[in-house]
Image (tube, rainbow, N blue to C red):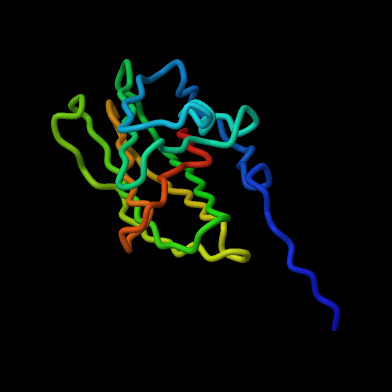
Length: 157
């Protein structure tokens, strides 16, 4: 039997069948850190870069504060790690009062293990009425290592 392991690139997982919100114009981003070569804007449009990456290791937060309340029905996230085996955890929360209080949407852990488990794709059907803030908190390495948090793609519809 001849076998070949193939990898799936980020561009292969973009769901084309949705009217994604233009997060660059609808929100202000608050970040605990950012690598200048991997700005948050590149997570909103993967053809423009490699996604967002923190400039420091350890837990990081990405918060989107929307100019006006929105109704969001879908959240699509992609995380990628090809260099280091690790388990990361992310928590996604939302607010309808400008970030005064948050409700948890999901808490998820994922084990990255090269070369086969390098891509985590999360696609959530939600009904967030009056969304004014969305917060993504990432612990990049649950074992306490020096990994940097990153998000390859972040879309809302």
